[in-house]
Image 1 (tube, rainbow, N blue to C red):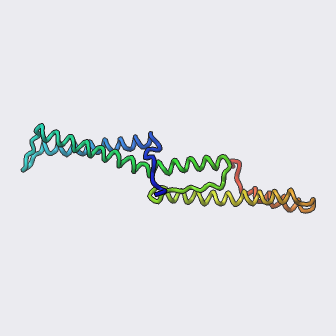
Image 2 (cartoon, helix red, strand yellow):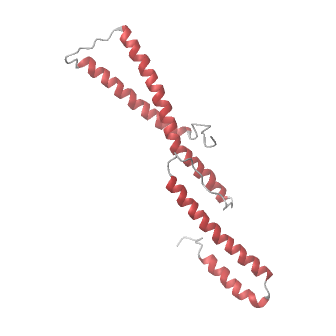
Image 3 (tube, rainbow, N blue to C red):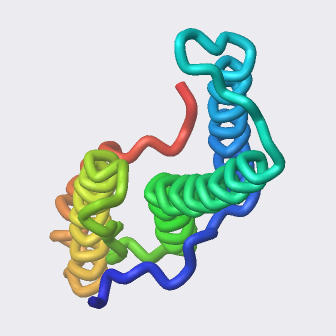
Length: 164
């Protein structure tokens, strides 16, 4: 169970807003159905007694607790990957091009993680090539320097560093 979620809430603002919206919708739908049953009795009239009101309140609270927990765990499948993307891209910003984004199989945005990993692999290969040419340039004799500088310039031209 190495992929087990230890923390359900990783982005409080997003997850609580999402869960609150889902719970509010659930409250609205449950209460609308109860009021509709009271106001439009049809063939089988429904009368609200103290006992039935208590049962309805308890069932509604249990339902809302379940909806709240379910919406938090569902929103984690979105917030969790966003947390991983942020953490790993910060590592890239610090210069670590060996990082790879790993998500749980049930998480959303698997395709985005694959695209980012492919881009990081290409960037890693380019930088490795530039490092290799740079090392060869340091070790080279003067007559080989021109050719190596040309290779280095060619590799560097593949990397955009200025807005066009």
